[in-house]
Amino acid sequence: MSIEDKIKRWVVLDNQAKQLISQIQVLRDEKEELTNHLIEHFDNVNKKYPIINISDGKLHFIQVKQPNGLSYKFLEQCFIEYFSKNNNGLTANSATAYGITANSNSTIVTSLLDYIKSKRTYTINKTIKRVYN
Image (cartoon, rainbow, N blue to C red):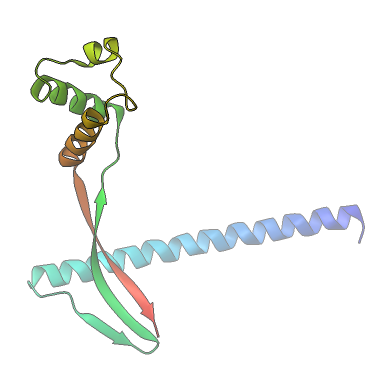
């Protein structure tokens, strides 16, 4: 096979791959729409999510608790609240000035991490999970 033939074959394969990716995206969009309709149906009739037996396995309706991302703005807000409420006047600037770091004072670090975890928000995502036999 010559170099020109290899290039032509590569272009053909690349075009086919793009078409398949496009088709997969259409299928995913339709599947997501159906998932939303099914979940909405069971939410509207106030029924418990069923486990549905299918020919090669089961469908489980599940809820996944997913933490929202940690942004700099969120962390800054937590630091300001934490240092103004929990450390008897110790501010972020004075902590740095006194050399308080993760290595020198793990109690403050642990307490701060616990505070951030308590303030973090979560999103509940509902979806359908397929389990194969």
